[in-house]
Length: 349
Ligand code: FE2
Image 1 (cartoon, rainbow, N blue to C red):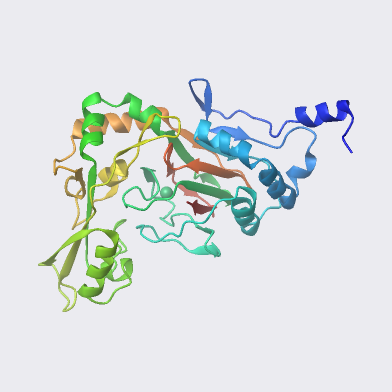
Image 2 (cartoon, protein in one colour):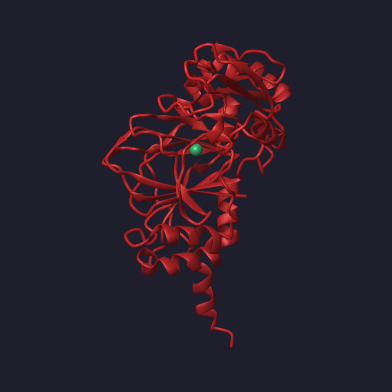
């Protein structure tokens, strides 16, 4: 039976979301970044019932897809925010949004699985360590198209997730810089000892990185990734089995990427490598270079840092918030914090 005309009109007019504003939110060509969405007025059940949230996402999946393509990030606030769990978040990702999990295999960060292969801890770097802006896994040939975060426990102070629109960043960089990034791409190198060196942010050793006990096993895994490598003796080594230093060398990887709307985004791990890949075996000048072997220009990197600072929007997490990020269109980072802070992550193809 067809509903009366008045009811049809009401169904049609019923808004899918409301759109609260966020302090420091940016607008590019009239499009909010990030887009903040909350339950629409009159749909109170979405504020406390996780199952209803999941079916709302499922019903309006194609609308959410339009929003994410247009805005680059959709930040969901107040959806069953007091009651949802990590398991609910997993169903929002798979059943609600219809996304397929991307297994976390090649990264440098330490993570733990929380719900199957869908939800895991975000980078567990210590609270007093800032995580610089990056695109997830852009230093590898295999990176996820979508990245999601879910706030289980907010920090006491700090702990925001700053985000930045990568097309806006690309458009503000010197033309000579973006031209050489587009033309040459970028190569990442990292030197590692056999065993982990916990004092270093990039100190994961080759035995645990590759789950390997011998050089042959390491080389097999590097071949599978399309990487090349160098071995050399570690002169500083004291122990008997600690002398084999490995440098893994990525293939030439893209440093910029086309977006769904035909613009170009800054897309790489340059800033994180330039600011953080430094220890007794690594220096930024060695770890990240243009694909033709040239060292990055320090003045260009200073301009990049300034642009990132001016374009960033800090997401102040509240309990139950979750966020869908287009890993091509936006970069993310993490501020330092105090308190427990549990922000979980999910990667999708
Ligand atoms: Fe990340």
